[in-house]
Length: 411
Image (cartoon, rainbow, N blue to C red; front, side, top):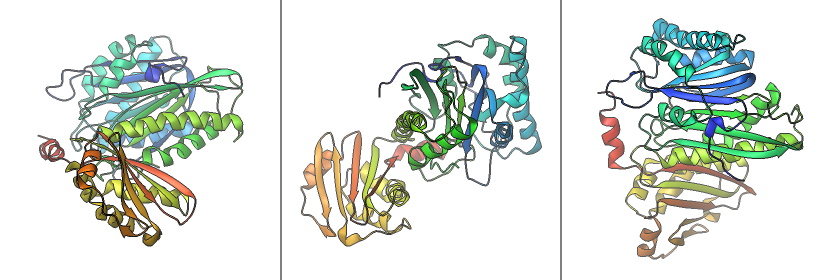
């Protein structure tokens, strides 16, 4: 599938912008982003399963009960989490002032409930929402088809690179576009039902099918990512569909639905890999694929257990082919497999090597293994013989820099 520029602005009818409000002292680049559709969208979202949830998560959940939206506003520099009644009011004010600014611009049908809100940054500090309110007219005035550039910058925290993607497919003879941007580098152990993701599409699809597609896609993409084992209070993935592609409306799980789902999976897989590869302090993207598992969910859980292991991650930082840690992580995953019928291999641009074969250690070339593990992207394959299912998960190595970044994150 071909990739395009434009991110969230690639689909018809969507614009975006980002401005600097000065939420976090010392920041010199944009910190508030806005995405807007010229037509009301069907909308859905998945959120963190952490019991401690940020105020924007609670508010966006409530607004999505209508399954409609026009806009998403997001800030970095402050998570607005564990902030009580004041935090709740601040999140609501972000939505209401956005709606009012859009109304002044001529979008008279927009109400507060049409605006979804996201925040990312430090937990436990009150958000200086008045700084966002002071910039809201500028934010709305700057909306454009090129606004994805500033918007993607505005949501970054410890990210070292922006993360966005856009694809196009054909449904019912019509070109259908999907675009996305995301942020995430630390506190990443995604288990959604501080990662933020936004998907826009001009596909005509019912709210039920949009929600179904998002949840189905998330299970094999975003939920298969771990950087450090910490599930954020703010994890949010939102999707807005305005129907402007004018394809036949997708209202059931037919061929058109699966065409849309395939495009969504391509988009979300690209983002999942980007988030894992940009983990805080990371020097390697680690991809683990389990084959021959009893079912797909088992395969995914087994793979995620491997890439979540601190010992596995540390070994890959040191380019140490310590496959015993991989077997250990598979063993405590909670999923059934037969160790005596399992093989493990490593692969990268430097070649491939088998290190464990059907339950038996292999006398492999340690120098070659170290060369393979020195590549930027490394693949682990755990081949089992317990079924026919496969699953993949993405993570990164654990480096000294991760500790440096998080040792004084708040101060």
